Length: 92
Image: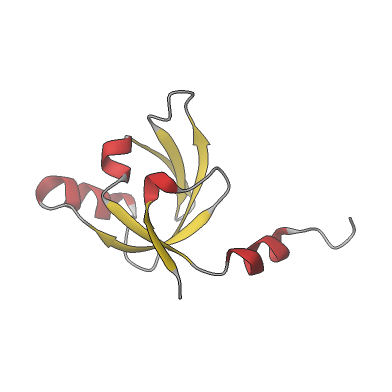
């Protein structure tokens, strides 16, 4: 079974699949416009020293989110071991 966590709990370089957005109204519309759609892979790529904001790679674009917004996006952590193997270079 896949673990479900909020987006802000990802580590740098870790990828999750968006399961749900726990927001409504204009903020939800903005998140959807930015590409935070269900079943979309998202990867944490950078984090400020204070952990707020953090940058995420979504649909080929790096987007910074405040921690309060990232906590409202739920992601699944599926097959992290398989993904790490794919990223490993075969020549060393």
